[in-house]
Image (cartoon, rainbow, N blue to C red; front, side):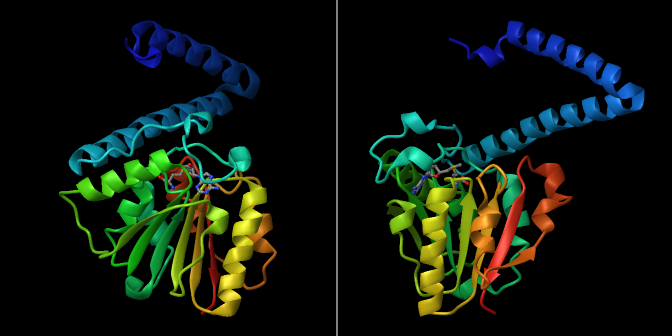
Length: 262
Ligand SMILES: C[S@@+](CC[C@H](N)C(=O)[O-])C[C@H]1O[C@@H](n2cnc3c(N)ncnc32)[C@H](O)[C@@H]1O
């Protein structure tokens, strides 16, 4: 059966809903304000389609399958308590180069770690850069299987990182390697888990001071990432690039970047 959102009836309904929304916007905000708001909403919708198309092409081109959200209650064989977790939703491929542009480092000594790696899209994108190692930490065994399959079948693309690992574990139990690191979070869990993960990062840093970047996508909806990381004086906010254009134009989510060490 065709998914509901692909049917003609649904599209017609959406079109009618857009017209009503545009009418209300003009009635509330006047002609200029109404057109601005409507234009912005249309731009966001068009953008989402383009980003998804590019994501689908990424999967097809590299013979992998990272598309397809998985709701939290459909995730199987979990290695931790899902109470404060999010389900699977992959980042957009187009966002990744923007994240990397906030890290002005020679990456050869760095390990990239995706906390809540899902099917491994961000890990595979990181493996196109010369990181020493890329690790995907994921607490659902099903998603770990998928990530392993994806890593094995990835083809037709650059792979400058020689070592990719899947760590099937709860993020709170994962121990950082002693190398400089880039830690990536795309809205994996809420504050209670983040507090524990931030504590682990801080403990690892105190035992072995080194450069650690924390790239956090979608901080607002993730319940206070800024509160959590902001309370450690060693974690300094280093880039606001992900909070403003061009990133904020192409991305439905905002990001923040912290650095520890030199
Ligand atoms: C929004 S998805 C992000 C996927 C991936 N990072 C990307 O950008 O494509 C969040 C992922 O975090 C995982 N997750 C949630 N809580 C977790 C936890 N406590 N430990 C490890 N992974 C977790 C979920 O299973 C899900 O795959």
